[in-house]
Length: 296
Image (cartoon, rainbow, N blue to C red; front, side, top):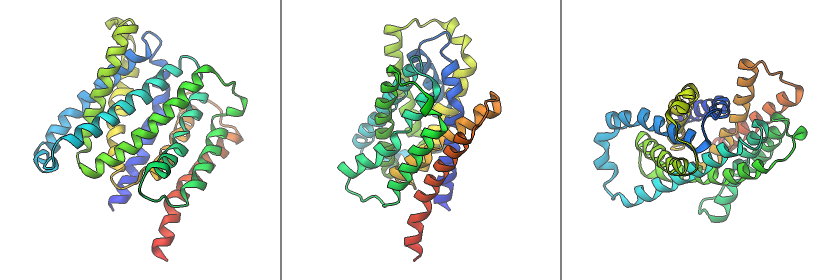
């Protein structure tokens, strides 16, 4: 039952991420990327922190019985990974289009198992590798990348994929040790907000009126994506290991495409539908094939 809830949490958070690409893109009409992220993630922090105190405050003593050092280190690592991943993605949207950004972001799918394979102590089920290939093929078709022009911003997105990967890996580590998804979510959003604010106030114009002009995009990307979705990710990874989790999160592209079709009336071609199909197959393979061994 807990695994099922984790899978549903992973799918819901991925759905929210997929619908947030539009808000991320339109939210920079009047403000810079770091200003956007600073306000976005601070809004996410404000949305989460009351819930953390309400539902997890009584668990602090038992969860921190081994000390705060490990929690502090892992919290900083997921916070800085999230800051770098989201910052690079947000800045890249100034220099590339959403299709390119969506395709290169999906490269965290192979990066996660490669990092675990090289540095981790746990083995990876063989089904992860064909699932990764299917997801990459699906992402290629889904984003119409074969018609795209590679731009400077694409290298930023690709570098960001590395930090999305470390974020997924460190999240899997911290939630296994501390069953405090709301607290972890609040801490990481605060870290991202603080680092983004420091860079934004230094290199961008931090004008309140301009921020208010983007309030709709900020609230959506902040409360739902920066707040709820990342908490759902943390909860999901309590019962799903990082490599299969990364494959599930690749559904972000599918949801982004469906959202663009539904809200922006963008036409879905045969390649887009095939891309969705390949990604769905990759996700199903990663989840179902390991069960065959258990049931045999």
